[in-house]
Amino acid sequence: MSEWIQNVDWPSMWLSTGQTLYMTIISGFFTFFLGIILGLLLYLTAKDGLLENATVYGLIAAFVNVFRSIPFIILIILLIPLTVIIIGTMIGASAALPSIIIGAAPFYARLVEIGLREVDKGVIEAAQAMGATKWQIVWKVLLPEAIPALTSGMTVTLIALIGNTAMAGVVGAGGLGTIAYNEGFQANNNTITLVATVIILVIVFIIQYVGDYITRRVDKR
Image (cartoon, rainbow, N blue to C red; front, side, top):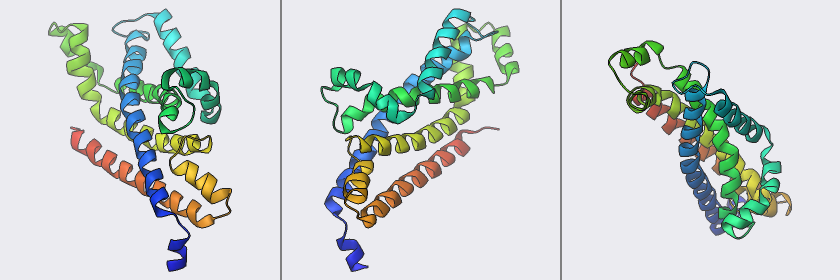
């Protein structure tokens, strides 16, 4: 056991864990808000939506489908020029954020759209009958009623973000992906790869537990 522990550079491992958490939290924050906006627009501008507009829906749906379909490792490479413009470098945890956010926001947007479609249309019709405006329906009916689905979808998205940070680490973003690949795989040190994997699993389990707990608390059904 002591030999196993000695094979791990723990200061570097904890630093990498912090980088992974940093990338997950920051990208999760922006993914949540961008996903909500895109998902709302998809729902509202769809056929029979409150703001039905086939052109706007088609453009947003195309954007979401394209970026949701591109493999993340390829997306990172494609967005290197944009990353350099925004961040000033293509190396490091911050440099991974644009690719992670652009890759995850469309994914969450579809989950938001699905969650909004699950809202009982009777509740919306009742609000319309009471004279509520379209934006009142959005803020006081749609979003509150869809909170359980939005929370559950965000839990799934955060777990996907963990996987994206690990892949980003392979191309120099830092985090547990980098240490598992550079100091684990390339250095033929399976212990480091195993420890990094276990830490990622612990983070995923915590996110899943907290997400499920919040979903149960906000679900009024």
